[in-house]
Image 1 (cartoon, protein in one colour):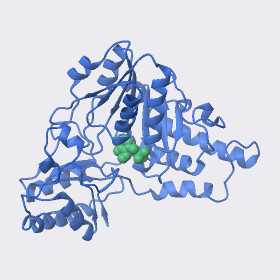
Image 2 (tube, helix red, strand yellow; image 1 turned 90 degrees about the vertical axis):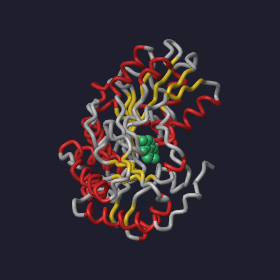
Image 3 (cartoon, helix red, strand yellow; image 1 turned 60 degrees about the vertical axis):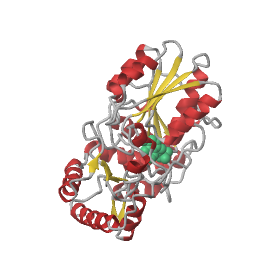
Image 4 (tube, protein in one colour; image 1 turned 120 degrees about the vertical axis):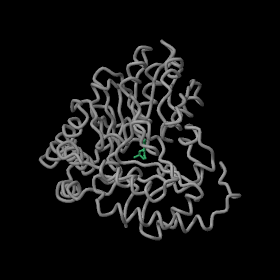
Length: 384
Ligand code: PLP
């Protein structure tokens, strides 16, 4: 298989698995136990906390281990609502991940107000609209994607945070697609909270982290035994935490240079199929992600065809499915359902290899030619 779906999840790094394995067998102590096995687990956990903090320029106590970004995002939204019940306004962007969209829907259902800021046609946030939406004293939280999972567009998070702070709002960055791929320094970007997931940076699934700045208020989502300094109760997932620490160390000390592979992929596709459109080329983008429109091709059929040829990739957002709903991200950028239904997302990781690119490109070109011969333009996938 050639795996071009790293924004959905990444293959676990063998070095990460090697680091965590002893914690699935002989080092099984509960990090809260006072005996030697417990102390061993705790030391490993605190080492990992330091590694994760170092990757994002934080201090170790500012890191809370969670089950993943969805939990981290839920925690921040509920925390902000409880911290400032008298500030009704939540601001998000129109291109958020469903984890944030659903939290925003709950915010509204519980009596809050939500403003969704539009993006330009290249996917970048409309900063003037953000400025106009902020209401000083009324805005509890500005919660936004840093890098988009579908298009790879990188938002100007430092500017967003600075603007939001002028209105006294707290700022949360969904950094799932940034951390481990791009340099992240929480203090220079100025956010109060930042969420990410281990499985997007080569750990197994079920571990993630939440950065909470020393200066920011925080009310826990999960209460109980008081683990994570009363900020996230429940016996810690020590193997996952060790894995995340190792992944963070690898990302910091031996950052991968994925951009040449990404550029090669786009160049080879454009050379063979000059009519394809690569979205958001005028915006800063992750060096891992290409969202590509193939005119005259049904993306769902293309996905199946490529799957049969051993190429794994996705249509719109793959976090929730192989669903045929047009991507809300592309819609927000002004594209219609037909356009979205002909769009593929290819995403690479540090474990992608140069040899895979021409092979994948060849299969994509062959599949596109094959499907175009069968395309029925009267069939449009519509919104469910
Ligand atoms: N935010 C973004 C940008 C994502 O890409 C994802 C998952 O794809 C999430 C949040 C949710 O992460 P998880 O499913 O690991 O909790």
